[in-house]
Image (cartoon, rainbow, N blue to C red; front, side, top):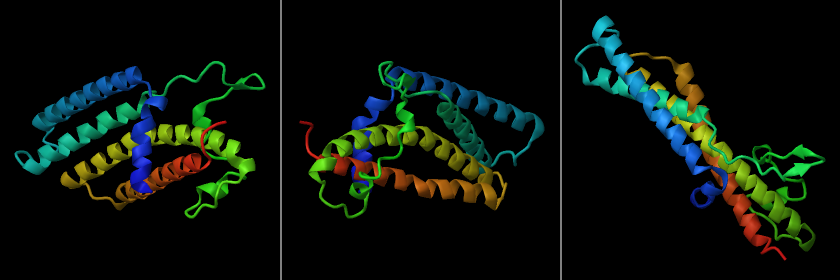
Amino acid sequence: MLAFGWRVFFRHVDDVLERRRVRRAAAWSGAAGVVALALMLVLEARLHWTEPGHLRSVAGIVLLAAGVGLLTFACFPTRRPPDPSATINGRQVRASWQNSVRTSVQPYLERRPRPVAPDDREAVRTDTVLLRRGLIGTLARITPLLLAGLAAVLGGLLLDYRSWFPAAFVLLHVLRLPEYVVRLGRAERARIAAGPAE
């Protein structure tokens, strides 16, 4: 289900993210990483805040700069703007709000789902598409954040900054990432089981 969830993510990521916004975020991310790298190298040359001349120091600085770039990427909006016509009682509906499904749909997202009842088919088709959009948006936002945290922790370890709390915090959230992907795969499996729209 994990591999299937990633395939669903890559197949539908363009439905949720806008390429122009992703390119802009990537450009700013690259610029922030380069500036951070240059500043840290200048500080190293002036203040010698790491052990000079060691490959570990250079690798640590590069990882910290990569973390700054990834953090910058996560700060930029990359989702498509919500459809202006998507309203409920006159209030705008944002795709990012839908990360859950109705109670009647939840049994079809379990590890061993039951067959989709005819009365629930329309609800399953509607809710799983909204859930897919929400999960893809969430994954697109938290993955760069987690990679930034991972780069910072690894860079800190290379520079002899040893603290268990940041490493444990990042590891805890990295371990939760597959849960989102599996849920994405289960949502798509339920949508397929519900059949095409009539």
